[in-house]
Length: 407
Image 1 (cartoon, rainbow, N blue to C red):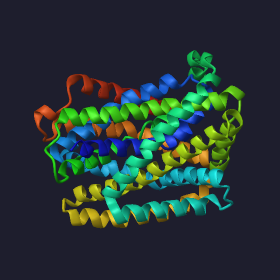
Image 2: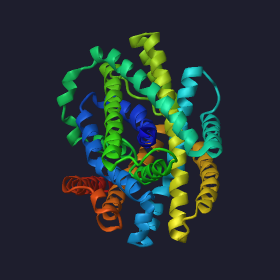
Image 3: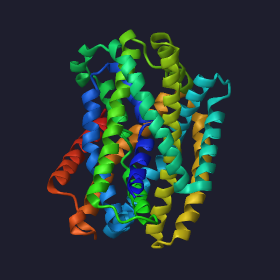
Image 4: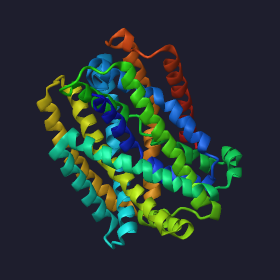
């Protein structure tokens, strides 16, 4: 019975522990040592309520948050589509480039990154379209479990090499480049906020699964919180890895996907030995495999559910038809992005993550309106403390987004 609840939490972790952790958190450690550890923790705290609202609504109503958006008015799902779905090809391109770079680094392939990235996306798409949620859930459980173990081992090996004096460094506060990087870091940390919509779908689908009695809201919330804390902790681990392996030696991260991946694997091998390098490579592949699978599912689900609400047709047939049409269409659009922008991988990633962050306060506001104004059981609504934290998060994210535009 509890596996029905654990599944969505693991899917969230699988989607989260990807470019936000492996690339952005590692870059944070490489560039600033441990100075941004508190920033990563704060980002995770502020974004938690909006994600939790997706769990609450999905559990209470067994429907997607987009149903609540439609209850607010047709403008809400249209706004969501405008600010989130349009950037999915860029996100897919960034994920595919990162994964392709790791494959090149681990297996020594000489294939072009765009071609290899496209093969990865097509393979993941075929897996999803063939098996759907059940395949995603099973594959994700195995990969996330392996990822957690391997990452913790690598982090433990890195700890003696970390300069703990950088933990209290504050020079980044007055550095415009650091502020822009923090916006990019926050966009995907621990996940883009549009994932809250998909999280509500995963929760609703788990609740509708056959067999077993209904799991309580308290158990569902606690399970998600456990997965969320694990996700946040792993983000801190990757920052520590970047600080111990790269910042300690003042080595700047490469800007291309293969270069960055090869740099990490080579530094692990040189600094910690072949065993640790192998662990790092396996963990990296696990990270990106789960993220690519989950991200493609997220894009398809969000597009299909958005169309359902705009067309006012909640039938499963419509959902499946749009899901199966949207994903291949997004992959085609992603192919164009891959071949145009792969040479500037980190710039592409920062663009995608920054766009996600600018959209975050809007989605957090929509989620807040749904769980406070739309139809759902009163005992399933969030308490005052959670609502207050979400309002504070909206204010902070809006202010930082304004600073980003001014800069």
